[in-house]
Amino acid sequence: RKASFKQLLESTLPVSSNMIQSLSRAVSTSAMTAIVAVPKQHSSKIPFDCVRLEGVPAVRFATRNRPGDALHRGMRLKAGEEAWTLVATPEWSQKVRSASKKWDKKAAGNEIVAAFA
Image (cartoon, rainbow, N blue to C red; front, side, top):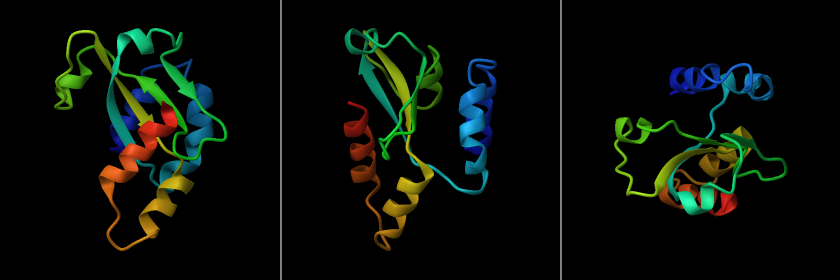
């Protein structure tokens, strides 16, 4: 996962250089992610392919996936949809994981999506 995440960020250099710098300490931690289908009628209002959020613990950044990447990840998008990857902060991810011995992956994903929406 870390390798594909690094590859994703490196593929958008130099635009992603600030993002790489801000996430450099995450090498020793992990952050939860959610890959979601977003109707283009909504996502077309976002003029960027990558968005860094401040003050939203459940989402540090969101990135629009390249066309065709969704199928590679097992997602089947409907016409008029595109895939976005949402990445939480390492701190929020750790808090969710340590809240119980058996954390609810679906609930965590729903919280990430709700924070982005």
